[in-house]
Image (cartoon, rainbow, N blue to C red; front, side, top):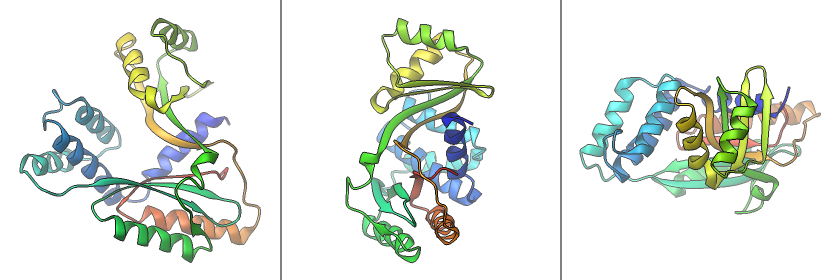
Length: 239
């Protein structure tokens, strides 16, 4: 199976831990989008996109409404983005993206996950150079020729296009995410995206052949998944 399959697997794993974690993740994102713009998705495109993604992952209407109402109510709660890089068991490397209102707390609990599984937290830049930050769009209901035509007509470049039975995945520069999505939806309003995210994808994948390392790796993933502040976890291990 190709890289598109692995991308979808990663996307599913990120949201498979617990419903409460999923609700907390989108609750924060919706709140911040509503607070930074207008609380109306019809006039706030960033909010509209996050709500669409939340609905696809079966986040309830009540969770979405509470997050928007919280922003409308003038809450002074504020979240900041934080990214941590770490070295896990064996030859595994991690990029952990967080959304937190207490950076000191978050870095402490993330560091603890790595320490307890035989890894260590790295400094900024120690791991990300081994990953590409890409706009990843997977979709159905469109052909490769149609994608190529859209890219040419809008003077857009992508680093790769992967075609599989499940659909098509394109990989572009992170800065081009909105341009790519807009160009595709303008040309094909009925398009359905199965993945539409910015992702850190490893330049080279690795494997864990040692059973003990694999056990520690799985435990590290599980521990990170349990942290409410953690939004996304990326690694270089081929599963």
